[in-house]
Length: 311
Image 1 (spheres, rainbow, N blue to C red):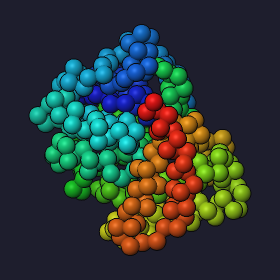
Image 2: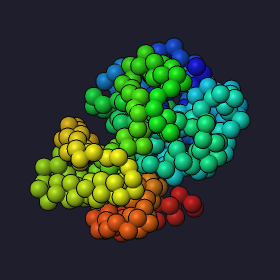
Image 3: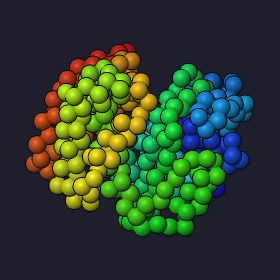
Image 4: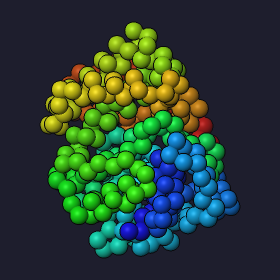
């Protein structure tokens, strides 16, 4: 399988880097300083699963130049998916398919709208990874997992083949029967932890140990669980407790990607995370007062960051 990774931040860099190290045929779509660094000096990875340097990587800012691909892993920020989706059609082989790895629950639908249902599978990942510098990605903690599933339900030979390739690269991988429910359970964790941590400007240790912020986090997760069930998602009763177990297992100084972007005055996934919860809650008639408040608290910084980036 020839795999093209679109977006070389923490997620795309880690997964693509490990795949390339294991011998898979991998190419990257990048832009700006990251593109320049990858062309000049390759990709450096620092991770509990190995520290290594890929001196030469195939990379372009034009997806069509990397065709044909059997699989495209989309690892851009969630608010960039709509922009990149139409550019992926010339990249795919006739039987090729795309897997989104973003935070959130909308990316697969956006990609399917541009590429067709058959060309998109469901997916997401769980890891604490970030771009330390152009061409340099760091990963912390024990978690590095990719979850795959067909959007219509069930499993398939194409996902089994991709899963085998990811597993051979030392990436934990699972193919699930209901990827939508699994994605919502992950979203329940990331949208709540990211917003609470960003609003409090605190790392995982503080958020989970201070009774007030722990209660706030649990309440935010329960709102998402209620919303998911109201929208017909088959989320079981243990979703919140499992999400809190993940929070309790994070490294003490761990932060969420949205939190890092907001505190760094960069455009973030706020509208695709907290904003999406508030929008869907309004559509479904479900009250989400915690997420509504968190969105209001964080929105001024988000607007300032986007205005600055546009200049």
